Length: 71
Figure (cartoon, rainbow, N blue to C red):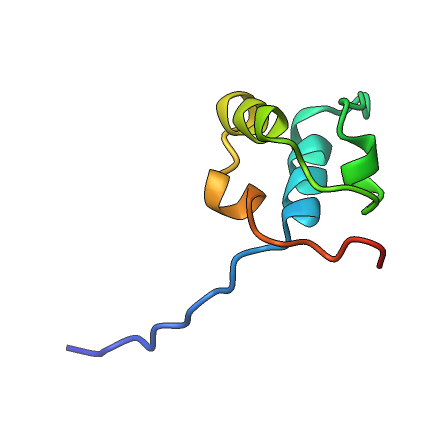
């Protein structure tokens, strides 16, 4: 039996995860209230994390990761 190598994939940056989800699921580029987050000016609030987790199915573990604010 041939063994396949296993590669660990790092969790994505939370901003990039939200942007990717919006691009895939909102072709009209409808913006949510997280524009400061998407522009890397603020972190998500707990309410925003819950909403993105429930509606977009982005894991909370990704949304709560530190992002490069002020980059």
